[in-house]
Image (cartoon, rainbow, N blue to C red; front, side, top):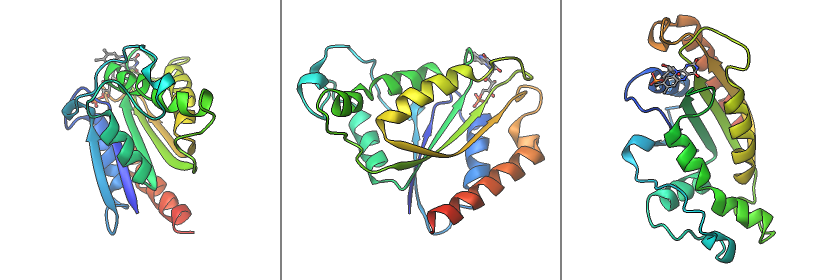
Length: 191
Ligand SMILES: Cc1cc2nc3c(=O)[nH]c(=O)nc-3n(C[C@H](O)[C@H](O)[C@H](O)COP(=O)(O)O)c2cc1C
């Protein structure tokens, strides 16, 4: 099984990476894992030029978007991992999401979805503050819209808060939950 992990944190080796590491602990063996850390990728801002409305599955900007899309296409599981920035995904993640407009035009304007098969997706999000109303609302809204473009089937959605005071690295409960979620995913995907 191929797993692509899209990481939207602006920091390396911090909470988001720790979420990913704990989750993947039980999925590493026997699976091909491709890490797409947006810090290492060149993904330009969408120009809103409408090129992808005239050209099926093509973007006028030649950067790492296409390779990331290809990894998604080849994957049995996609993990989306993001910190919370102003109740939503990070700006790097948002830039990437905007570039899935190519996919949106595939199904909406060309009536021919680029992602024809359902894709299994896991969402891992974390916010630094203790819980407050609507804390993850932006993640909900953003993911709901964007994940439609990749025909996603969200099989696990784990969110942690208070990571500024209680980092994932020191949070045994969170780590256990993440490992358990991975076992559920493994069972589901082996059926
Ligand atoms: C620009 C910025 C905005 C943030 N906005 C929020 C927020 O709205 N709510 C929240 O709970 N935490 C917020 N945080 C805290 C991060 O979500 C938290 O530190 C998270 O664990 C960072 O992930 P990382 O360790 O992978 O960088 C924000 C942090 C930054 C830098």
